[in-house]
View 1 (cartoon, chains in turn yellow, brown):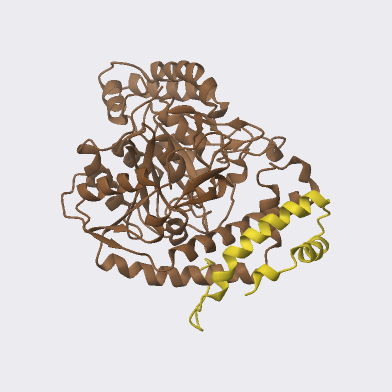
View 2: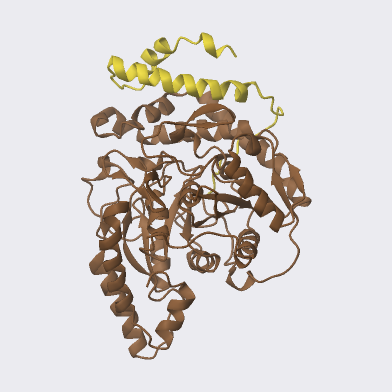
Length: 62
Length: 459
């Protein structure tokens, strides 16, 4: 993944609309810091190959 | 008086050396004396403590058999529901909510065992943090050094025990929130197997990862409280169908434990104090081999992303409508989690299953794994970064980096306290296979009887 090239301000503006969370510029800047940090963690995880049939670990019981 | 062990209290009540009401009054006096320096409590339930003590003394007067934790003072992280008290979860956001109508399941269990509740304890807001530097309720200070953090998110739970205000406490651990403060405050903490203990009646943070557990100053105390907390709760859908598996009578088992030290990620991201503590424990437990967990760093990342997404989604409605009431340390972290792509979350959940399947075979060869609980001992209150492995890491996010992969697996862990050369405590994780809390506790007991562990009252 090319996370360094992600346009986080654009992503934040779309998510702001999608989740209906109005923000000011200082909060957008802090969000960019947080999402950039998360993106750095997510990159290697997304690149890690899992078996094709690997299921989620989530618990759901009836 | 709170230097007494649970067994001391059992004996003292049995022979009439003191009453439960004596213990309650001494507890309140100690809290009044010590808490202003520590800032561990957000609510002191004095009248409840006195009433519960009177009920125990009535049992004594009638000559009835006392329950196992009779007269033992304790307190709980303020995300557990206490009847008649507003559940804060460390957040101003919840401070205007009505009082809880009933106790959390765990408090009901402790009440049935005769323990006496003294109050609710400070924590990181929403349990999202490792320092208990709460901007609304204040920082909880480390009883070993008031200029240092207590750790978090169960910082009040660790500090109140280390300072001798109560005998034990309850905390919760999503990514390390029992083990980190236990490490930094120099006491023991037990994070049981994921799904072992009911979480009903506690404010959730990350349902996929949340655990509850006890903190105490001795292995025997920790074990007795753990035994009292066990029990099926039909209302907790995340609880596994395990029977009552008491450990108190198993601590003395002398069977050999095959122990190994976790290297790689766990050796890289800690300082010399943590390495020395691990080496001392390894020597005592005859752990000759060092092994690595497969992809431990990815596990830490996956736990981080999973926590951010679930925690963020949990608070999204409030982030929309009451953003001004949020703790600034975590508001945008929560919102970033709420905005994170579903692909990250789903991959983290799939990786979790892979990580489990590739880690559990290690227990065919070993009974117990040993790792540092925190990268270093307690940092200063307000300190933003800590230098580990030549890199400045953010304290708030990184103090739990060595606990995160283990709770992501859900394995049972006891954190044991050792003293560093500088005089600050640090914890070592004793990690066992699923459902084998007895192994962690037995190993901790062996270290304790060798005199290796800290865990003494510091105030």
